[in-house]
Image 1 (cartoon, rainbow, N blue to C red):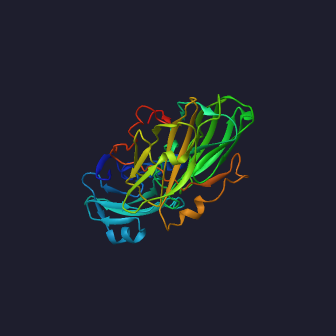
Image 2 (cartoon, rainbow, N blue to C red):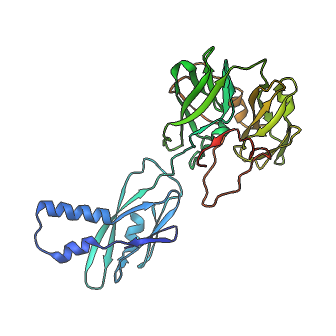
Image 3 (cartoon, one colour):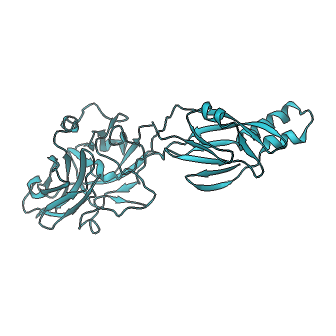
Length: 364
């Protein structure tokens, strides 16, 4: 048979069941098992995630009894003498394998071949191991907006974002890692400075998890009262474009905004005067970070989490940082992840982002 995924030919598979039939004679138990395994391997059909696959018989053969094939499983959505179509608009992680008997003939010989139909899972969620390209003031709770992780998730529809699992902190004496629906939170140990590695995992709606991925921070002692960039909630403006004066979210003397991170759902641009313009936001929540430096040279990162007025996300975003969500605990993120596409979309970033990216996404 010849298999096509989304219209693309993958190659031909010999009808091994017919080969075994033509060899004739009684086979040993071991040979019979080998033949059965070969049949199953040769007739496995994996439906692409939320897609379809077309199967055609080997040259000179035809499919018979389409009614029986279509009745065998709802995954069989098309049948002619020349082609079978299997499709699944939704993915079910508990679907398992479906055995579909298919009658075939070549005008002389007729036989039934079991096609073993399974569903391919989506790509597991992921984000690149990365590090901040600037020092982070030590002490207290350090918030890292989830938009800065650059999570890519194919199947995060139900929650709007991935699940986030806080892992280890290395070295352990640097503090403890928590997670909320919008931020990673490092409860930094008093007096610790130096490099810190935060281990984080992200999961999707199907239960798949990314490998433990490291976010690297460098904690430093501030030379004076540090710049105080805030992490705030703000309403998303109806009409698709939200303008914000970021200087309202800074508690510092003579601050300068030197960059904005990429928005989680839409795109953001930041002017040198501190006006952020967010457009193209989808769903009820968007988020981006911004980076400031004050007159003393101290740096700080803030974030804006935009919430659509009247949406159900507001109550979840207003919840305080959970004091008990430390270590391996996980939480459903409200901040959306990027959905991969076949074509690489133009990245929407702030005008200063190419110079001062808040997160260096290695390999992105």
